[in-house]
Image 1: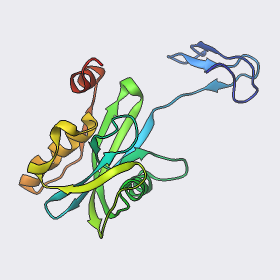
Image 2 (image 1 turned 90 degrees about the vertical axis):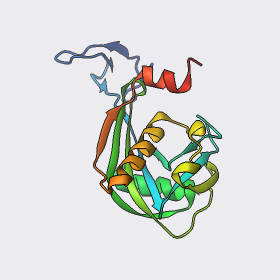
Image 3 (image 1 turned 180 degrees about the vertical axis):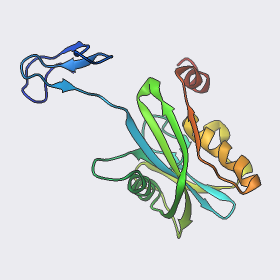
Image 4 (image 1 turned 30 degrees about the vertical axis):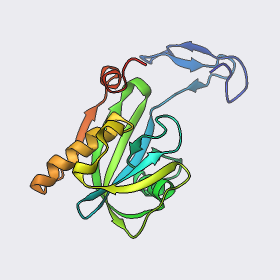
Length: 185
């Protein structure tokens, strides 16, 4: 950030008085520009024994499989965002269940919130998906999963399904986890 969105003057990066971390500050109008993590909301759509996955048509990780999820928009709830992303990416309607995974990614300023969901009706690829398909556990293309958050969510689901108990799972993906997943590229 170079300029203040309130008055257009230059900003500086410093710790405001009474704060504990640097922020973009405008000395001209006094605005403190807070930058906060982005919420990624999505679903784990299930139909019988199968999970619905989308093959990404966009970067990052184009051509890799993911659950339908994306950035939450202003003026919507996390549940609304999860259902909207499922409609956009998979042209699918779902009955939302409980929040299932809450995963922090502090190194890229994101929080993933994935809800369990029951697939209702059909599905097809949206503009952000190359294809959409239902997979049994043994059919999941594990080497082609787009993100560690999705892989972790799927592993939780298949373990929990054995006991028919689906608690909320929380966790963190660190930059080291990400590097192990993607390599050093």
